[in-house]
Each structure stands twice: as structure tokens, then as C-alpha cells.
Image (cartoon, rainbow, N blue to C red; front, side, top):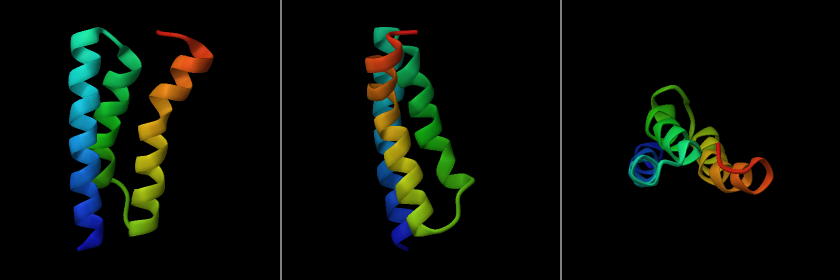
Length: 70
């Protein structure tokens, strides 16, 4: 049950990233949003879900800081 709740949380965050990336033309947010919406279907287990979700949530900010906007 907890995995399901976390999947919904990360899916909502992913939708926000996706919408922001599409409107602002920021591909890193767009791709991270797609990843956040789709990864719960591929990952089993609560710990893995949380770790991958946090990693995908932080990814756009790290990528923008070190790689710039692409």
C-alpha cells in the first residue's frame, strides 16, 4: 500500500515537471517528468521506489547546474 501511495506522489510531481518543461521549453524537466510518471510501473519495492523517485526529482536541478540547459 505504501508503494502505491509513493507512486501517486511521484506521478503528481512528474506531471508538474512535465508541464513545466513543456511550457518553459526545458527538456531536462520534461524528460524527468516522464521518468517520474513511468518508473513506478518498472520498479518493485518501497525502498527502490523512494530512492529512484528522489533521484529523478533531483536530476533536473543537478543537470541544469552542471550541464546547463539542453
